[in-house]
Length: 333
Image (cartoon, rainbow, N blue to C red; front, side, top):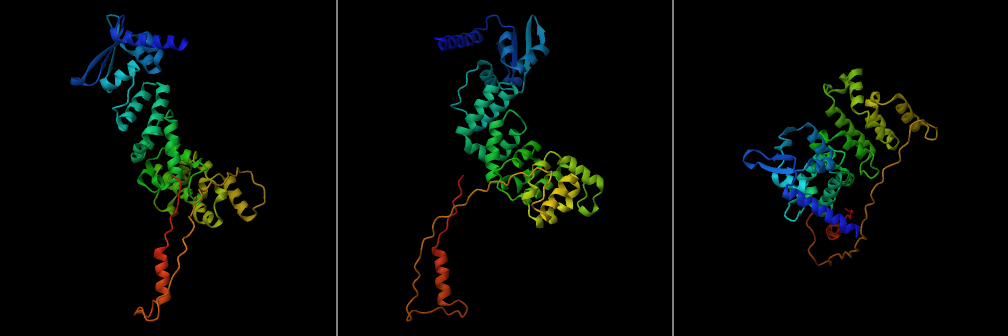
């Protein structure tokens, strides 16, 4: 009975919007020839979102009617937002994504969560095809938590999509930190260090290309850029050879205590240290199917033998077995 009552109440509010009785707000939506006017009620808008609340406070008022202009929003989209009636049957994935951005701008958190789920559950292929754009937009806004997780899970399995692309330098800091925190990131820790340094250099202006020419100020600048990233690198999972080869040249960007603990752990692994030792990342198991046994039969003596003095019959038989043996690496996606 209660649910039916609220359903009827919702219908009443929708009808109030349609018949415009007692309206005190007008919206001019769209640009020039595509402009359309909507009439609404401030008391309802005020409760619906902080966005409308701010607009109502700062808007102009004429003949006791508040006038608000929204040229950046299409009439079709605004009608969905103000009415609360959403049907996505004829919407392409790109349109749903753009609608999500506008809904987020209008500050409807429950709709933001709903649209993220629609994209992930029903339009995952489009998200993957437009991965770079989706990832960049998602990490620009703290409300897109579900999309951020979607992107993180993909990058963790296929890190080269970002770390070996031109998009690395444009990656937001919060996106990089989120990846560094991910236990399932499928990269060697020394390689992660390399990519973090590359990202830091790209974000730090006026660094000499030759490391030998760096001053103390250059190292301080890089340290400032990476100060939120460095704590999430798992230094104690890096081999001694890579510590000397890759980390040592940049040791000045580390806290003195961190560098001392890294060296102490290499020299005396059982000695206590004050630095936090992060666990190793979880490597995905690569499963190989059982090999198909192939019986190799050598040709009889009266068959013509290879004329090469380098490749013998035994060699030819072995090469043939290589061709026949099909090994498929199964990686779960």
